[in-house]
Length: 107
Length: 115
Image (cartoon, rainbow over all chains, first blue to last red; front, side, top):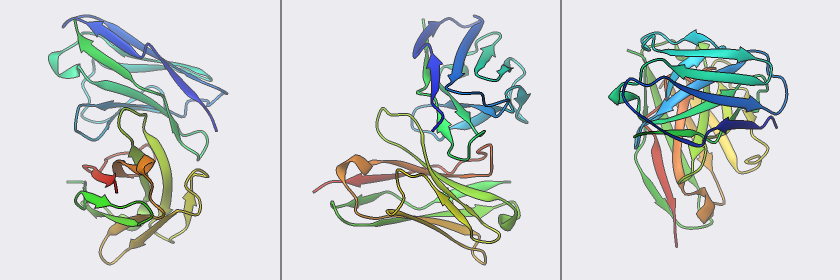
């Protein structure tokens, strides 16, 4: 299986900060990478697909980049509702796998 | 609107089976694969398998092969996931989701396995 590793595992930031989360795949996955946001007690929500495509309805402060093995999710200016856990997920292999998550907390 | 609504929480004893439903609405059910995933407490999301809602073909994670069965009822636009031989480590929130990438997700179903 393709292993997905995120860094950092947790992050403290303030409203208005620019934040970057990274995701590394154990082998090349081209651009078959999605990002999800999960709030406590809720189902994950799709933010970014195909590494850099913004899902409809998702604010433009979210952006994704990368290809091959290294990817990033950037939030340009943190809003109070962005404090959540973020997961990357590969769909290059039909044995889909997720990163361990990055918990974004208020500083 | 596109929506997936799952059945309610379950409490099972070790060795039992659980079957969870996922009712789809707002889209043509047979044109999408339906995924099943789970999240154990404090753990990362884990993909279990999917079903092609059109032809019923399935693919399962090797981790769950032999214990999981995913089916669908096209007339009811509902997908089902049955997990057998339950053990305490299967205590988790189980989700259904549409397509690839996974969007949207059901609200989740908590399955607790305890003697």
